[in-house]
Length: 345
Ligand SMILES: *[C@@H]1O[C@H](CO)[C@@H](O)[C@H](O)[C@H]1NC(C)=O
Ligand SMILES: *[C@@H]1O[C@H](CO)[C@@H](O)[C@H](O)[C@H]1NC(C)=O
Ligand SMILES: *[C@@H]1O[C@H](CO)[C@@H](O)[C@H](O)[C@H]1NC(C)=O
Image (cartoon, rainbow, N blue to C red; front, side, top):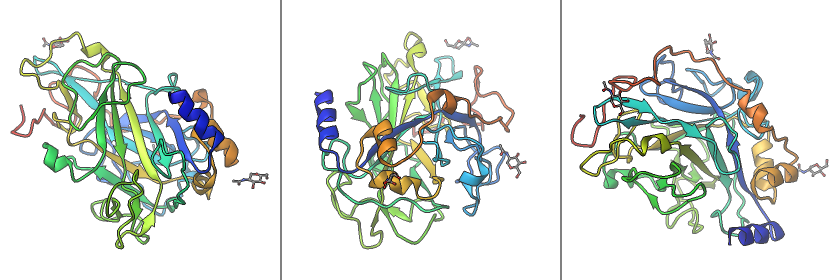
């Protein structure tokens, strides 16, 4: 069935569903968007993209010019994309970081995340909406790290988890952490809002310059609100967490999840993602305007260069925050403990 879809899409392609991978650049406590200049920032992140990433990323910085390499497959993409990292909380209270995997078709990548830029819903064969690329200096944030309940999390849309029974499982999606062992790991998906105010490259909460469609969803072609009239591509991240090594350990007797985000959230509702645009010149707009499907095809149709996975993996950054994030920890880096929404434990 999936193959049929793909074949149809290739036969009838019009505009872009771009899907590509970026290997891990660095894992540490830096966050130039929410805690600019702080070394360390509040909690641990996993970051991908151009190696101009730093504790301070003024919007006037020229990321393509300042980067010497990128961990992304599109060689002209020097953006930075990041998320928190996952820890397993053992029943004796100690924490251990959950490793990451590449994704389907990117198995040899060093962790990182898979990125989509879409014009319409992924399985919409039309893909005919014109969407605008971001401008230099643009950045945004999705999610709410204080959310510990479904209602708090529902201010954002489509920030989800899949308990992977197989390597290609993509459903069902939940908004909380899976509460059973997942044979092939856990996938988190983060979908950013798709309507821009057309003026501001950022906003104080890094969210207000962006909006969801006024009615419906991006997938249903919902129109953008008057306040945020510019329809941009749907940016989506997929991150695969290798939880397999924790499936045989003792899990909480009360049926709750043993996983905790690096900022203490033990519910999963606080999941969030950060985006700093850094494509070179018009490279992203060319891709968004090209009729294409996924990495190789989109590169060909837009005259873009793709890097091999080996080249992506060879780009990395020296850690600046010197601390143990991978041992058996009594407390999460930055001082966080598991928070189930009714106090830390
Ligand atoms: C980050 O910026 C500081 C000061 O501007 C510089 O010393 C450091 O080398 C930079 N780090 C990276 C990884 O670029
Ligand atoms: C706590 O549990 C983990 C996972 O079972 C184990 O690896 C670790 O040794 C335990 N720590 C102590 C102090 O017993
Ligand atoms: C790609 O390059 C060819 C040959 O130079 C050109 O005709 C075409 O317009 C280019 N396409 C894009 C999307 O830039």
